[in-house]
Image (cartoon, rainbow, N blue to C red):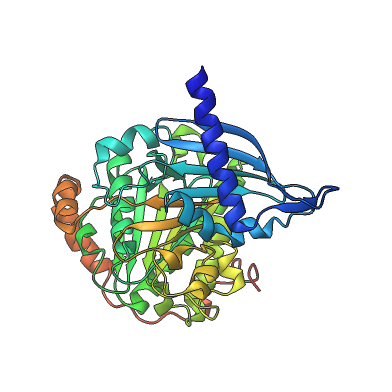
Length: 390
């Protein structure tokens, strides 16, 4: 009992010293002119196997912005494996003993228990608590992944798609892939789930037109059935989920036809079982205007060149990620969290996907991704939903 008390007193003294170094205190003098310091009030100190967690409240008159502004002092005092979360007055400081793994090898056996029961699981990685993070695209339908070359962005896309293929059969999930760098999605060609792999902008335009047409058809099906979501359709009328993944969307954002279709799909796809993964290397306000950014609610910010890029994608802190930890990223959902993505090599992905391939479909995919004739706007939209995004 005494040792527990001493441990808490030492931990309290340690945090107060950090407050002193950070200038997080108020001062007052007694009648004799002696100066005293008042630090934030420490409500609780809890010790766990992997971390120590403090809860503290700022005194009236203390600026909460100073806590975040002086985060570097907490890092200097406690080390880099910390997390500060809070609002205008109460904060929680977590000090992790080991921190996030610097490398995480992909293994579907580790992931499957975490995603079990999800409709369309998107695997993220492991957080500071050593826990797997994943979310359901059925609930959070549109994702933006950004990061410099070599930061782990492409590997993350590979892990997400490989997990979906292993989790859902080809009757439950259809994949439409845009590989505008012509280097990432080749290993998915011929997979039974994959309906098209596009490597040129005009191919992508044709592929998006197919998904857009399917979106319109599904709207009619739901309307006729009188239901709000594809999952509510009768068993004999069930339709597969669709995942649209586009790597390097920057290459097509100046095409107004493609941009219109993509915005409509992101806007209306959730109830229709159509979800998106979008990635790019260097974001800018011109490429990601407020209209499309507002639809891509989940963000994965791998290492970025500077704070400006990090803010555009909504993941401040991603500019601080070291080159020594590829696969590290800032995940933005309800809150920001630091995550290590699983590392899946190209060769390993090829081996685990081999059993999902169909020789007959390889030729089909080739035909579907042949360069099409450029589509006119009238051909794409046919007057349906054309005013949705005006």
